[in-house]
Image 1 (tube, rainbow, N blue to C red):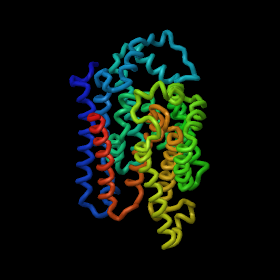
Image 2 (image 1 turned 120 degrees about the horizontal axis):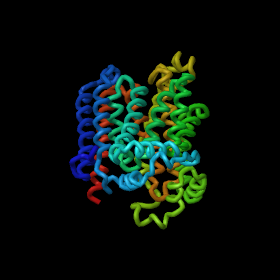
Image 3 (image 1 turned 90 degrees about the horizontal axis):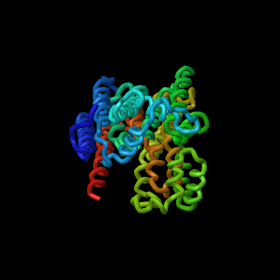
Image 4 (image 1 turned 180 degrees about the vertical axis):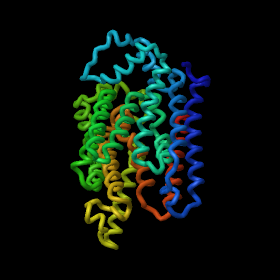
Length: 401
């Protein structure tokens, strides 16, 4: 299996423009609606599935080029791998990642065949997770994910982190039902994700806290806001503390070797631009809480709120949808607060991805499953178009500077 017969610089251009046009087309399709009928109408999963399958091939068969960052390093490691004959699992390291690599090598797969298998997992687990969470509209859900700021990068550059976090999305989606059988499956998937990238411990712990310890997302919002002040005042202390936990050796080296990486990392220091980007799901969660409080103050509690204890149940959405949104958004805010406190570290985008992979999931779930605006169809399409436009704009700016 050979690489795509196009130049490496053309691969990301086609990806970003194609995804943006899909999102723009969906916006025009939704812009004429003044209610939420299009969002509530059950859509076929096949357009999302076909696009996902195409991108698995497209991204998996990318040329081995420095255009895709660590693709070259991963290819070098793969070509020099010994195969299963010399493989000995080390459960203190990323044993599953090593096992997959050595198995593919032993099977005689080319580098691009191995990349293709990684993309199957990377995009496949997300598709299955969003299909579970957004069964009425997996098409819009996938477009939110594909047009996210980090999606292409972590499908072609940070592929180990990307694959592990996609497995986490799938596990979170099936764990949301709290069915004992699905909880067991989710736990197994999370263990496997940890075996691919140990840094997934952060979102896993955040999900547990969001599911069983924090009952109100307002607590997480307050913690996220407080983390900004803590980072400004005690950023170096938190960087050294978290890096000392040692759940990811590579990230630890980034955090403790600022001088070494300063020249190769633009805008080292507190990343206010990343912070503004990260704030969107936080603002959206605050807005949902505000709508719930306004409705409760005006009309009192709904019967569903009284019976379930879930704020907004029977007003913004059903109790299950509200509970799942609160868990997903709280998970995002807790994990992102970790990044905020260490964002002075070099290559802090690698830390940010431990929450950013949840970014499009939180936004998609809110605009598809929750009834926030009267003209939600139009608002959902506009948010998707703006989301994709931002990603395309950042890509184009990156090409200029």
